[in-house]
Length: 314
Image (tube, rainbow, N blue to C red; front, side, top):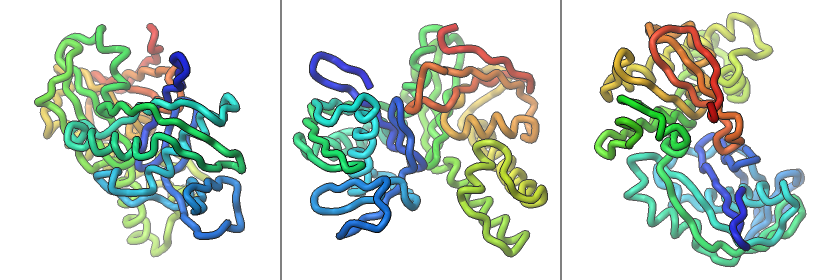
């Protein structure tokens, strides 16, 4: 959250797995009710309807402007961010992102979607909010993460933003993005979750809760039997190998290019670095000053498996 004159600028990442702002992160999901539900901890009331925020998991949809839920989730994200400074009434400017290759085609519609009500009032956590939406800017996902480093980049750099729903790949030559070398694939980490579900059922005839799967993908461990954990990690390792296969299909050469990975996929690669079938070394770059909207560290890959930690301002 940034302040400019009388306007508060809020960056929002409308992820398929999590909604993120500079200081907040919550699951991308909700349940709508016509009357107040029994549990109200994450309750948002808007336009006569009741929404429990963070419940369920949104189905994948390529055009978010066609889904009413993302507007309600946007209101929740703004409220959560404002609440960090106890603000309930404000002039808001929204900065949001879209997958690389969809930005030009969806930018106008998504901007209009977020700007549909210049004046909007709602209740969240039993607190009334009154917002004036002054404007919206849409940016290509992934590029924002590398922007602080762009002036220092030399040679060919490949940026891979691996989120929950999509994998975005951008080539940069001497710090400048190549518009003709951008790719978006439906190969986010949720595809790994689905693959784990199927493999676990086939091998054990049991279901594994998604929360447990996500914990393993995020941390590499969970309070489950070692044999069950091994199944999850084996499928996850194959998913990571799939990431690198797709990168090579898009022209990535680990010997002559530097690869930057951000998003949840980056953390998964870090966890499974010694399991994946590749000969490249690993160099991690953490950007600690980039909080929840850029919460996930960025990793830079060259040859080898040893890695060092550097900071964004180094």
